[in-house]
Image 1 (tube, rainbow, N blue to C red):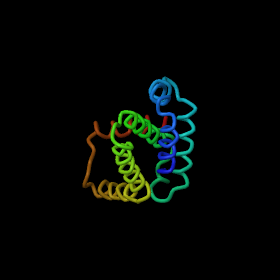
Image 2 (cartoon, rainbow, N blue to C red):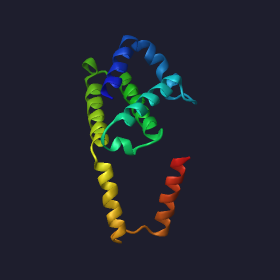
Image 3 (cartoon, helix red, strand yellow):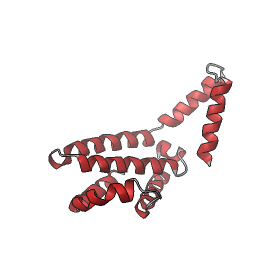
Length: 144
C-alpha cells in the first residue's frame, strides 16, 4: 500500500504545477469516477483480497473507495504543504498507512465481532428497537 502512495507522490512531484491546476477539479471533485479513481480502487481491492488478517473480512468496493478518498485527501494536503520536502505530508502519510496496515493485518476487527457476539448472546448488550432499526438499515444500504 505504501508503495502505491509514495509512487504517486513521486510521479506527481515531477509535474506539481500541472497537478495543482487539474487534480482538484478533474479528479478529487469530479461528478463521476475518473479512470484514475477506478484504477486505484481496482488495485486496492486486489491488495485487500491478497492480504492476511482482517482485510479479508472487508469485501466489496466500500473500503477501496474509502482508501482512494483518503489518498485524494493526502494529495490535496500535499498540494497545500509548504514544509521542506513536504515533510508534513510524508509524516501524515506514514502515520495513516501504518494505522490502516495495522488495522487490516491484525485481527482486531474479527475479535471485536466475536466479543460483540458473546456480549449479545449473553444479553449483556441490547439494542432498543430504534437502534436495531438503524443497524439493519445501515447494513441494507451498505449491500446496495
